[in-house]
Length: 427
Image (cartoon, rainbow, N blue to C red; front, side, top):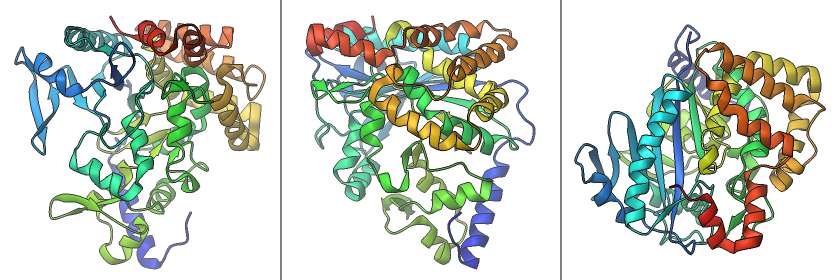
């Protein structure tokens, strides 16, 4: 834990109590699951399209509620799904959940995607099951001009523009008060598992990037010395340690007069002057992008390291996320048996290998990944909803030692970016 002054310590403890109490006292008897699926929108040649061109068709039936920001339409929401603008003009996020199980999640997601693909097809646009814009570089012109994005560009400069390209597939699973720290640690420790199985962004700016996940490799450069993105430096000991560690990050944005404005220094320094301001802390923490992060407003853990998946295997990362958290205790025991006290350095080393080579890289220990998938299968089978079938693509990838990124590289070698677009488009 960072060194703290008495006033900082008191503020951290107060923030930790409030954050901790946001989670239910009882471990959920049934874990629901939500999904935030980002998709690149591109023209047939691979150049980024503009979500703004699709809003009229998506809004046409009149059953979705519009939301505006700075005069722009940025979201259409209904009771089952939401379309929202992402940092990049050429990216749409489809939000579903919370859903009772993966079966319901798939049903709702396919309903949302059908409407989206119809609107895109009419506009001559492809919706990709891919993790990054394949051809268009990240620029200010590509950034959706939401005011808060302008603030982040001001404080982070060009590295923020990586977010205009990325297309992740995030899953949220509800957790209880006594487990959120341990399961957050596990989700972060398993970042290399997610990369190895679900990387799908090896081509951007029209060429191979030297990594199977340009998303994680490039965005990991944002404040890299403080582990702000991706796999963090270590596990958190308890809620106060988590809050203190998050607070030791650069303070990028704060509330002032109801507006989001640029901040400076470390967030922890503001605790001396302003004490335990929970709303300011939540805004600060929202812009820390570790592979697993607890979300107190939903009482969930969000798993972030997966790229958007190919259309025919689009449920793979959601199944992985739910499986990891549902089988958390068993998976933690498997890792402890296989790696013991070396777990973090061993998994970090695997993370580097997985980013470079995907499933072609050496695995961290014999039988460990197979054991983790088996534990996930058992946990999902025990839920009694037929959800274990969604693990099939992950098992096939492991057996072939080939993930979607490795397949995408082979497609690119044959057909370039247009071939990649054709292979990974929905519809």
